[in-house]
Length: 405
Image 1 (cartoon, rainbow, N blue to C red):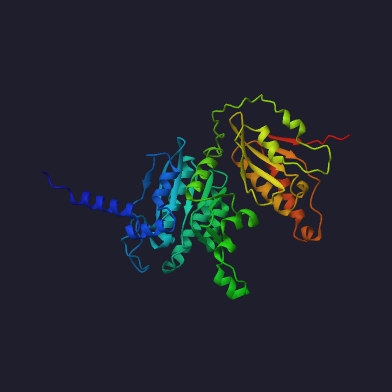
Image 2: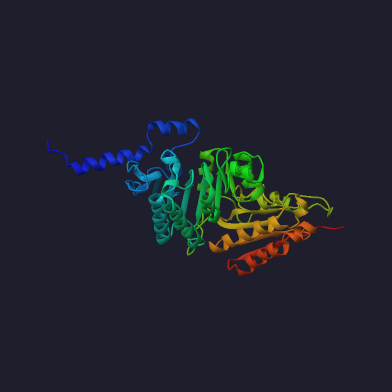
């Protein structure tokens, strides 16, 4: 039997190491916390058997940075695959290797992946689970973050970018997902903040824990940073797959049309009774949206933030549309600072990706008050005017009329 080439044997051994992450013990620790291994997350995200890994043999530089040079992938798994037969590029930080901390080589891997995605006109999905920058690498790790931030910015509106926060995302690292189109968090597991509880306590004296400071429900309902929250990792990953289905692959294409069994000429008699005769009586705009769009197609974003406004994706005759509406059952559908920010950001995202807009209007105007005026309601409200005025996608506005005796 012919002896194997030593170089082939070495590559096989390296490949084996790359798939083991930080080792079986650390993977077991990850599982004991209810968290999946980076490669398990990718398998759930992509269609079975479609993942093609890139740069599996990357290691940290073994010099003055203090690297061991033995951790294959350098704490992030990168590559491309398919979601519903459409190509996407994905990276997943591996918490079993140095806590997923980002260094020079990991940053370069992510940056190269983003460049490939943009050049090929494909969505980017990042799964964040990192302790932050590697302190031992100093400015090199900060430079790596800067390269990622730069690409987040220049590819914004070019290809869809989705961030799934699987664990910690603290400090400057939180700015990367904040620039992306959709931010998905995992309830009771992921958190984002710029300064941690200990720093806040030492500076301001405020005592707060991780969940109360930057947990999923905080960012979904209070800060508005998160768009969706999954009950667990599998749910969050499924939400990401669902979100991708409403986007085109890039800004030069139209969103895909999906098979639809709902008759586009369907009439719903219940719409005639949606608005109560009493102009002071509240009603649910959510019910109206569900009646208008393809059945079971409404995909709402930021559900508990600025609930007086509704934004989300839906389908009409199988085609993606963006829905913007006021919610009369919340603050009578009045506009305020938060709802203005929520609407403006969504309108600009839809315009970037060729998604038509349907606006359902029932609002008495802007919320009066000293706090609103002093905090810049004019400036925030102007964002909505700017977003609608500069958008070039088809727009349909429906003023919801009230019947009066």
